[in-house]
Length: 275
Image (cartoon, rainbow, N blue to C red; front, side, top):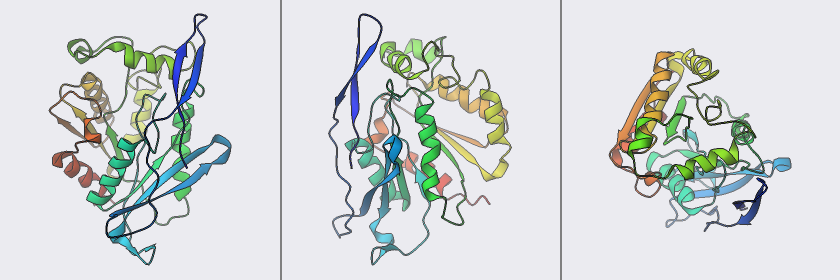
């Protein structure tokens, strides 16, 4: 199973043409072997929406093809500005493969419908639908959320956006493609600090000790101020938030060079002893 993505062409009349293209991709590896520390398998989530997910399980946790121990489950949503990317794009696949092995956890990487053919909230809706695949697992308790270089926006440029040498056109184009027609970057889908955003954060805060949130970013990344603003908003609403910001300015660097401190941060929330 593989996933299509697209290049988007702006037409003179303002319309957008999506041209199917392919990223370099890798297939799932369902057969355990000494040379294969993690097995992966593709499963369908919603046939009508053509959504699916890839599951990753450490080979060490398998016994005769069946998991012999209960492992933490991490649902990982790949990046791409809601307009590009793929579950089987090799950096995303390699990242989940590495995380499953190093953290001894099951990783689930679901697909979601891409803009501009499917504008937000389509991707958000698909993201909510995906965990339903595990509804029959018991006991299954959500421990928290990891925001890994999250993609936020806003009409007014924050200081880090103006000080970092990175073209606004890339992120602005993504929001133009994926937000509802006529919406700007202060829509709640892109800027969680406006509208009903604080109320949504308050809902997370009411979960109390049952939920922990980690915000992971780069100190010189152009969106670092937005990461800090959202982390502060959650803290103000009573959410248990850990900020983990490492040096650097490259977006997505962790996909190819996962530092041990970041691994330790993710491990701490996965293996939290919260009830």
